[in-house]
Amino acid sequence: MKKYINTILVAAILFAYTPTTFSQECNLPISVVSYPQNEELPQAVESALENQLSRIITAHGMEPGISLGQFIITARIDVTDKSIHQGPPIQVVYDLGITMYIADTYTQTKFASEYIEVNGVGNNETKSLMNAIKRLNANNNKIASFIKNGKNKILNYFDSNYAAILKEAERKASMQMYDEAIALAASIPACSKGGDAATDVMLEIYNKSLDKYNRMLLDKAAAAWATGQTDAEAVEAGKLLSLIDPEAACYPEAKKLLAEIKSQVRKDIDFEMREKYHDDVKLEKQRIDAIREIGVAFGKGQKEQTTNLTWLK
Image (tube, rainbow, N blue to C red; front, side):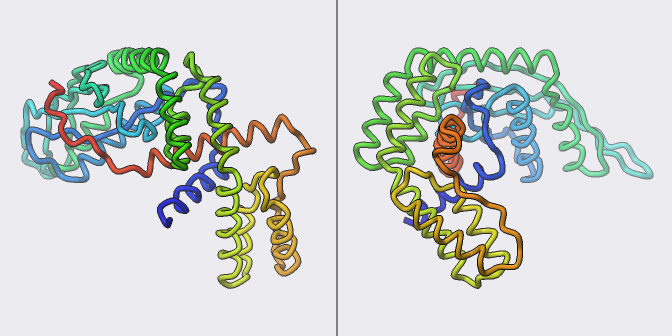
């Protein structure tokens, strides 16, 4: 139950601060994972590599962290040369060969690969390696072509398999596994052949679980407010209340709680409840965005399952 509530809260926070544009863009789902390197690297270097890969795929319209582990981008580092220049100051120079992969881990299929040579200089080994990794540039023509090839393969996958994915999502929903069901449907890109069908299925699943989701938001808001009834608790509760769907059964209770909060705090709480009659079209867009964020939150909350990547060579 705690994990389930946390998923909803992550979705709420994501929606509150980073409204999505799934309906306008073609964000393809992918996960950044670690590759078993030929030699042990400092944790800071591995983290820097994962962060750089995340920046690259984001720059090219891919959404890191929502593939549920199926589609991945990873990279292998090979040290081709290392030298130490005596100072002062001492300078460590690394020449690296970095092989990047985009793959489907379910079928163990390599979609795209590219080899890039980079070098870095620093006053110690870790800084030199990290400076080399920073030279992986999203605008590099070879990297751009690599990403484009991988994107095309992923999009082709969804064009061919969206019906089966939605069928599985509906099966999960029938078992009341709503988070996972929405995540499956949300993984289908809006720009793919199944984009419209995925939106319809997400709305259907969300409507089945609407009261459950929104009751959790209300309960969390009430708990936050009850903690101390200060300005800080009021802001936290107000953010959650502003996300509650007007179609939810608990909506009148949410309005009542917000009114109570506003009457008891000095700070101007500007979070307003959404009213259906204000703008049906805007509300529907907000609802679809919120549903997709539930799927994103679920995908990002899953533990990495890809451990054996030795087949990627």
